[in-house]
Image 1 (cartoon, one colour):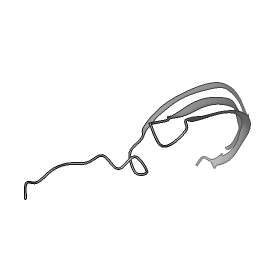
Image 2: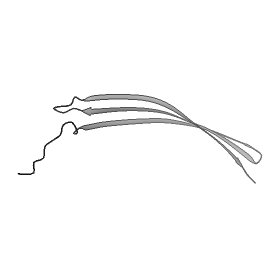
Image 3: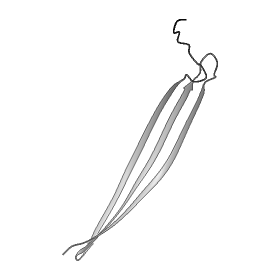
Length: 80
């Protein structure tokens, strides 16, 4: 008996994926004597697309998603 490789289409696939991230930053700082405050905000939009390519036994599928996030920051530094 020879070793023969057979494709298992239930376990075989090809997946394509793309992701785009766009971000903007705002920063503000203010000093009061020996104390410095800093506020920041990062706004982010992410768009992604994926495709599960089908084969002779399994159908293909696609998805896409866009979502938005805000990431605030706050920092206090005392000098001296």
